[in-house]
Image 1 (cartoon, rainbow, N blue to C red):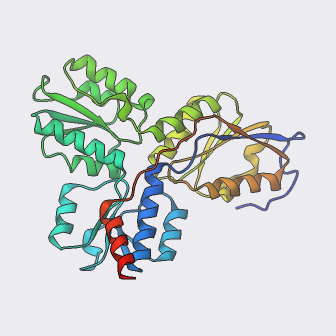
Image 2: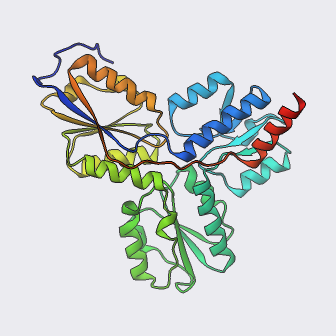
Image 3: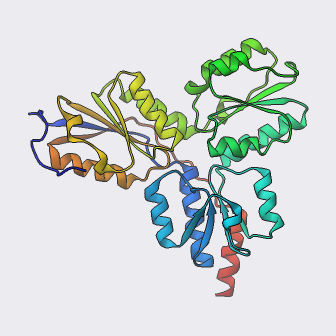
Length: 330
């Protein structure tokens, strides 16, 4: 941590600070948080959430304060307790185990992740082996692989695509982790299509709009700034990727959980700073970072980018029905 003081940098002139547009919460994250809050409002605390609802400490702490309890294992949820599945999705095995215990389930899986699940299952039911392009160990990847009953291969990079061995190259399909953009998967897909000309893949329209929009904004922003700061969790796949894009462009880039993790020394010799936030990072983190910058030096605040996101995902049926029943009783 550091003490905020004026004149700690070597800059004599105001620093231009560009806020990437879009940044921060996507519709899937907004929906997931709203599900936990609404479940708490209807049922009262506690409600149990398997895995972090989204990958952000500030959000998790806020929901814990309201009465949410986050667990990694289904066995840690008491009988009869309201159970919420995180935005990343879960395997059929975990869902079936919850059903077998008659736990009241509310599924906060992002609708775009659910769409990937449906595509993978459809390919498998049609007799295809499925390749999942994604990061090993990511909860979304684990959930997707656990939703497809047939053979699933995980491919994380071009080298994997070059070396993968499948049983039937003529009956093959692929799906992708939603937090990977078109740019992230392009070379992998090209290699798969080169090796397996008959492979089936999703429509480009199925790529997560939020992932693509945030990465595209950072690619453009990175060409205009001397420093990039990304607000997001270290275990957030999409936040890490935003930092990586900045580094690929040759821009000093940092990923921080909290605004007070910024080091004043980063600003030495800098005249233009770019700020963005991962899809699970709340806007209040951006606001706090701006205030910290203002405490250090004079800044000119500007918005960079003109993409407006107006996507809204509805709350799950089981939650809206429960809310209606509660209102009728009252």
